[in-house]
Image (cartoon, rainbow, N blue to C red; front, side, top):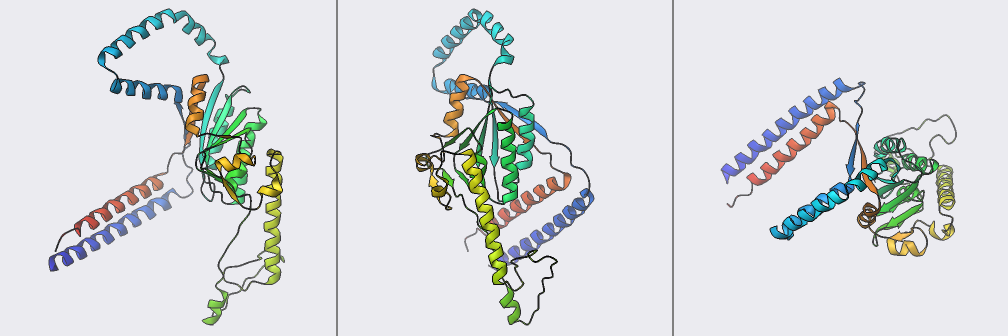
Length: 345
């Protein structure tokens, strides 16, 4: 047991030393990168029709016999020769085909992915025609008003260009997530996805009494009566609370007006109480238009037209790359440390 104790202490010191070194190196690199302009990202495009075809062929090679595959290859060869002229015509008509562009948005509390979304939308709109369609696979429980307001404005660019917009929700589109979704021509939700939460919430702790208990003064100086209505450390007043609630109510009114404008079929007074519904129930009250997973919907669209998944990949700075490397190294060390104590005494 003494050996294990000494060995554990040695490993703990090693982890601490390595973590300190990585932290110092990361800090130096971060400081050196400060103020430098990041390199532009790049657009990544995946042809989902081809991806689906490759998956089907891989499954066929695993499931069917060699004889069946051989016969199928012969038939395909004959068919290709027969349809060579037709294929040539299709190539000439390629530019006239309608296309589906698939974008993904996985929202956090700050709607951080809005920067990648705006770039992807800009790229798509440079090519999309009115007969095309943009499908956004949206997942978000909501978050900050200004972040999701900007994200919704990005989707509104698609509508303004006259391109059909479909939003697919497999898990959750609530609060700011639904603010974005309601811009779609059609909202498709999985049966147990969470939809709604048309409401506004704000919360913060207040430590003023704790500070007073320890004879600590904290002053909040403002120029403007409502510059700071509620604070974390200062003493909050009833007047400040009333103004804060007034601002919340105004935000809620704007939210309801936005949803009512883009989903006029919804009884806004009935649904805008902050409640959420599962997909099947959300359809009953017109919050969504159809019940289906995004997988099924896109598979159907692949049978009808060309479908492309479009993503904007942001290039990471050197500091960010080192940070990720540090995190991976620390995680690896932690796992090794945990395993080292997995002995029987």
